[in-house]
Length: 260
Image 1: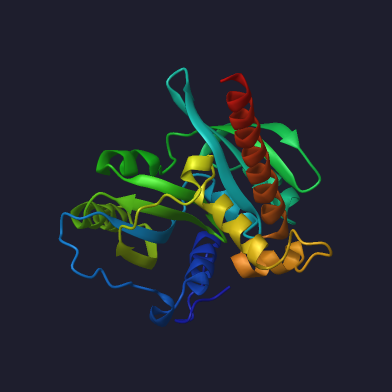
Image 2: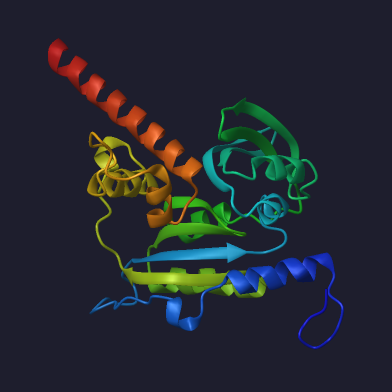
């Protein structure tokens, strides 16, 4: 393949070019008014990052239609370990690319369903990790998942200065940063008391508004997926996990009231 200057492009350059084509134009980036917020006030950002060394970078490049959502992160023998679920139509391509992804080691398939797989991986020394950066800045992650060939974050920074430091980190490490929304912090309480993540709350709310839970259904999973800009498999996973969490919360509350 050749670039716009007529020079040949290697595989990494072609992938980078594909990332750029996926990026929104300036008119698509939404910068919300910060009102009278001060420089030391918290800000909330919706952003995406991409880089050849980002965790699972090769796998998500090979299967951009697959959505990856972390289950949890831990350590084993001093090495960082990630357990995550991948869902989407291209799960076979994702699985194949995962086995050779230079950013992770020892991938293990923990569980498989019709439309999703759960894996356990160790981070390699080459992996570019963002969680330690957010932790150092005192940032709070509301939601994290892959979107196309990028990692997407909904994150609260404790100040404008912290957000600027994150942008500087991205710039110094040649990370492509796409900012979709930046706004003054609003109390993020929706679903928190129920144990739901932001993405689960949004999915349930959208499903309810579109009549997904009505009989007969007012919307299909495919229609929900288009509305939320995720795969139908990811919609199914979120609804099942959110419903399980709500049932657990409700049953626990019921047992508490019965006992006391």
